[in-house]
Length: 201
Image (tube, rainbow, N blue to C red; front, side, top):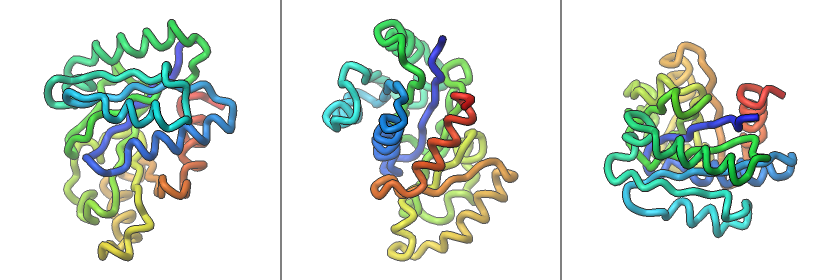
């Protein structure tokens, strides 16, 4: 059976890789078989970090070097990512879920539906509580908006309840989840959402 493919996008520093690491740890506890693809300009930095984490067999991590704007290979021409995902499924046929991380981009980064079945967009409170009001395509179009680093709100002057209210308003009630990937807060809810929406359990 084909593995579910989930895209993870968001600005630089929003905590995408930390969210992936938290998901890997959580899904391992649940006995899920997961693989990862990272995308960046000309490096494999995020892939190497995940390989070194000890949370996943390093062979299950692929790095795609975009050679240009990172959203190009997740939206305009996703063929490199499709090939990497197909290869992972061939080498590891037990894979249930493939997490595809986009290189840090702006609020316009979106995923091709030819590449992913479901995608989430990660923003963080330290990036400013005006992010939802800016109505970037990533914030508006993603299947799930993840507001990360909620523990920092008191230290950066962010009114978290207002930020979440505005996020829900601009998304028309489509799902929004809050997380602190470092502590694990909200990760169980995120896993449950992914299991329900893409693994159908």
